[in-house]
Amino acid sequence: MSAGGPTETMRNEHVQMQPLFAQMREAAAAQNAASYLEASRALHDILQQHNMKEEQMLEIADLIHRAL
Image 1: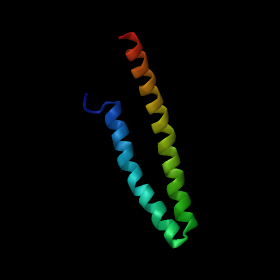
Image 2 (image 1 turned 60 degrees about the vertical axis):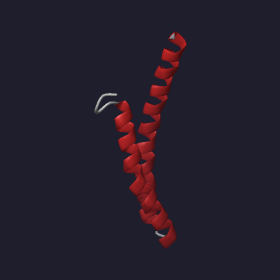
Image 3 (image 1 turned 90 degrees about the horizontal axis):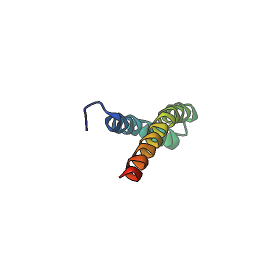
Image 4 (image 1 turned 45 degrees about the vertical axis):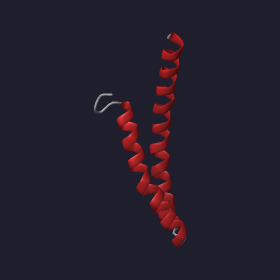
């Protein structure tokens, strides 16, 4: 696995998500809708891109598996 490759990028996205989950938990506990919405929108943006990359990687892995 090379540094800066797709799996490293995806792992970094997981790291980026953690503070957003924490912000959402804290906002929910404090009943702070604006903070919750801000974090959930940021999480949504990361997850959209993350899931597309993940699907592409799974498709490639499936093609390789079928070729073997």
